[in-house]
Length: 215
Image 1 (cartoon, helix red, strand yellow):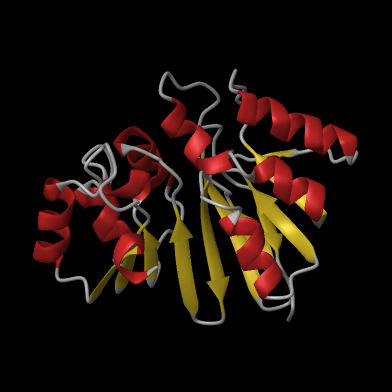
Image 2: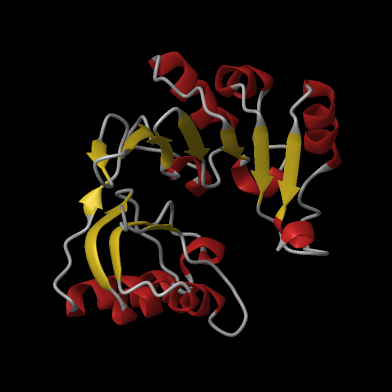
């Protein structure tokens, strides 16, 4: 239908997010989601806000002290965009055919910034995708316990494939055909972790896509 949604705009070289959007002729972002305030998820977000017309902007009610977070808030303020608090239970339509349901964060206080992550299910016709930010096992457990419908064809694996995410209970509740892992080549954290990859291979998932291999 021509609508556009962007989830995160992290640390990239040479404005990769902006260049990607420009190469696809994007003029307006109907929905933007900043899953949580960590640098590797929002460092380019201020440039995105400055450059594009934006409809709704969703983010969790959690502040951070980094320059990237401050720049993002300054850019929102300069364009008079009031963020919508992202929390479990919020639903919106991207267009007539695309439905979005936010299933986390489920609570209003977390010690770990990763568990503030916005987890969003997108449904297009009979196909569905679950985007998880850096949500860890605590958040995953809360999502399952909430009874939210998280069954999805494609799962964006949480926290770059860290062993802190992708619990068996959560994974089998999603029961994806394909998974995507966002991780930089030779990153300092060793993502995706061996434990996660071993589990995914055992799970019988059909396709495993990793950004440092696939682009």
